[in-house]
Structures are given as C-alpha cells and as structure tokens.
Length: 362
Image (cartoon, rainbow, N blue to C red; front, side, top):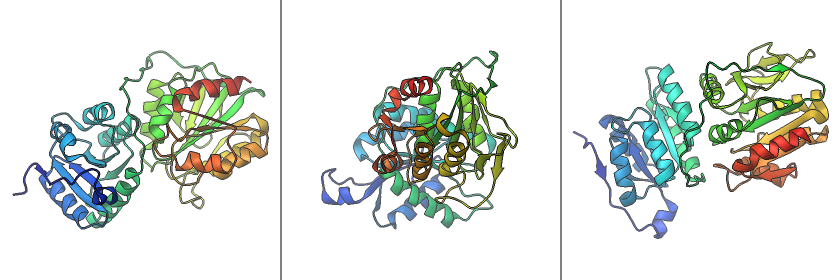
C-alpha cells in the first residue's frame, strides 16, 4: 500500500540542481491521488517531489524540512482543512499553491475562496468525464507557472463581512459618473478582494470586472466579493444596466460588451488573446462608448490581455491605474501594460483603493 506520508531526500537549497528543479509538495487525503501525482511529476523534466502529505497538518509540519517551491493542495483535505491550511501558509510559509478540487457546488465555492485567500490557480480532479492524463498535463503547466509567482508574507486578516440584511442601494448612472473596468488574471481574485472591500458604495462610478476564470466559478466569485464589499456585486447577465455603487463581473466563457442602449451584451465570439472573457474586449467597448469617463485598472496576471484595452482607454481620454509588480502575485500583465506606456499611475494593491477613489473624484 502506498504510504500515507513520505518525505524524499532534500538537496541543499543552494545547490545548482535545486535552482533548476521545481520542488513540489503534494498534499492530498487520497493515497491513490498522492501516488498518481508523485509518479507523474517525478517523470516530468524540471520537477521533483519534495514530499507527500495526507493532510494540511502534516504538510505544515513538513515544510521547514522539505522546502518546497510549489504546493498542490487538496481543497477538501481533512485535519486542518484545505482553506485553513492555505490561510496558515499565507502567514507562516507564503508559497505558491495550486488547489486540486472536485467539480461540485460546494467545492466550487471553496476553490474560489482559496483563490481570494492567495492560491495561484486550481485544477479539477479527474472525473468520469475527464481523462487523468489531461488533468496531469494541466497540473504540470500550472505548477510551472506557479513557481514564478510572487507570494508576499502577510498577516492574515479576515475580510469584513458586509451585513447580508443591510440593503445596498445602487443608483442609475449620471452623465458625470465614471465607468471603471478592472482586468485581472492569475492572482487576480486576491487583489480584487483587497481592492473592492475598500471602495465605498457612494462613489460616483460603476465597475465592470473581467477576471480570467472558467464558467461555473465566476458566479461564486461575484457572491464572495459581494459579501466583503460595500458595492453591490453580481455576475453580469444579458440586458443588465450599469449602476453607480455596483459592479458587474463578466461570466466565465463569455465576452462582455454593451449595446446602443448601454445594456450588457454577452457573447461567445472568438477568444481574444487566448481567453474569453477578455479584458481587451471589455475595455475597448467601454472606451469607445464612454470616452474620458472610462477608467482602467490592471491587477495581477499573466499574458498580455489588457494591454490593448488600456491603450484604448487612454486613446479615448480615460486613465489607467496599474498594480505594481512588487505587490502582484503574477507581474507579467502589469509589467506588459507599464512597458507599453499605458499606465498613468502605478501603485501597490494596499494603496490602490485610495488611488482609484482620487482618480474617480478628480
């Protein structure tokens, strides 16, 4: 029988081999899953197994000895469950984490919460409809990406929970109100939470959020963001209207634009920059329709989806605010926007709410 927990010999952290290899700690309640993952990862060039743990408690005890670069974490791990383990990790051992999750409603909620707590990405565990080999290939790619992430040490602070019984009162847009498009990719949910929890509902602005996330997860993200933000946040639906004090989140798998009556249009047109929804698509649509009333915000992410959108916003008279590379979990997207010359202001995520409030009110 495969052992419940095993630790492999650990080379010196300063050795040449360790700088070339991504050391992975696999945490999963299932011995079969641990065996399958470790076998596949050992056979992958550039990746080695730092250790195996059957729950979060074991993993936390092992980390100082095995010194992983990336952790794969079972979202439903027992004895110090996945979310509790992740929160402790972000404080004690801030390391890149890829979540492994089942595809059901409860797991979807837990996975999205893990992303807002600091996990880099997630992979759905194999099901009757998915091929194990396909899942392994996806996991390997996400481990490699996660290894390049910047996970800053932080004291975990429970985000404020907005009183569910206290009504929020979005109002119709006025001509002078701003339309703010927020674009994010990997690492974005955590940045989104930090930003939106600090924006007052009385701002003369409406918000449109494009977060690269697959279908089925954006609804949960919108609900979780709504729980901690003074803004009224929901997943966008066809025909929705923009309102001040509110935010619409683009659904996974659909581009978000607007028609001549300023109503939300959702479509499955071709992917842009390899993604759908696309930050470029929504920023471009808002820039053309709202001109100098449009503002762009670029948060943590990979790739270049958002570079052209930021350019469009500035072309039509709007301004662009970018999360700085030091506070971004993944800095490729903010770096690309800055390098292209499309950033009017660059600030840390801790300073972003105040900077955006000033930009809206200016």
